[in-house]
Image (cartoon, rainbow, N blue to C red; front, side, top):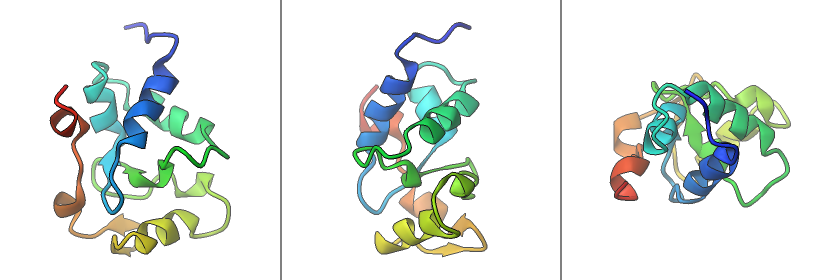
Amino acid sequence: MALPPNFFENVYDVAREIPFGRVTSYGAIAKCLGAARSARMVGYAMNNCKGREDIPAHRVVNRNGMLTGKFHFEGTNLMQQLLESEGIEVKDNQVQRFKDVFWDPAVELSL
């Protein structure tokens, strides 16, 4: 399946909607955009948005709540620190109570 040329911008549009204190997954964003098998491309998009403070990339984790993208943030624990500053508990690089803080863009954006 070919991705649209503006796929990264579409990913960023969805990511901007993730509420403070909530997280979503790469796969949930991909599914929301009609590209369910493109979770890895969502990850590439998140990695590509460095320096864009309007995109809360720290709120995007893997399907199990793991901070798999943390190595793409400056500093050792910046992703975790950003999540914790929003009240999200992280232990051993995993969001705690993941189901409680998970935000599903396909549902919340009524797509």
